[in-house]
Image 1 (cartoon, rainbow, N blue to C red):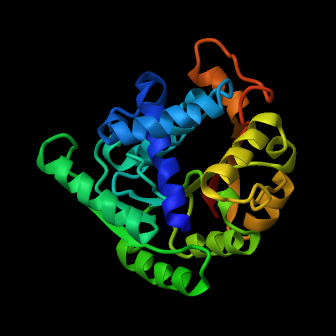
Image 2: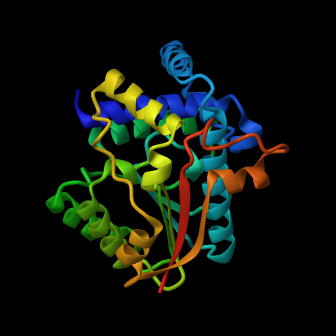
Length: 279
């Protein structure tokens, strides 16, 4: 199975999970992606990964990144939002007053997303938005170069908030380093770059190991193919262009977004979050 199809299935699952707790995720549009097929995907994932609290994993992640987008927009009214590995996320529609978004993913993902979101905008189910859809395989150097050229044109020197949600562990180390350098070329001072990642310790915790094992069985993605890195490596990869504004993780953020903390490394994949600022 091709990588774009693999990622898109998980994207449907993520929206199903977000839709089941809008109060936590802040995503009032996730339910638009609901269907019998997608619910079946959710049920299979839920049965296999029961007890690992993915309703909190995706809900907290979504809420945190949405809060970063909203505060960035408040600071820069002319902000351009760049959603790298956009999947079927709805951030562009959730941020009031956002003038332009750029959505980047595999070709079939962006084509499907463009068609559905345009249809829902015409029906009044989504608010009108100016969205530019770009396709790219980020692991290919020539496609990254083409992407850079397109981003320069589309961002045109305006403040840009760049989000890489749920993709750093699917990219190899050299590719990720190249992307940090690429984004630095299109961002101005103090603009944010945000993403989630796993360090090797948390990546070996039982919930993460179960998820990787399940994806290997489900879509053939090798459990050993993930890119985990230490916080010190994060600094080495980014320090030439960025400073760390905030580094946190889901265990810390649950205190902000859950009424009662319930998560631990034993019952949730303990992802870390990074919010960087362009030097």
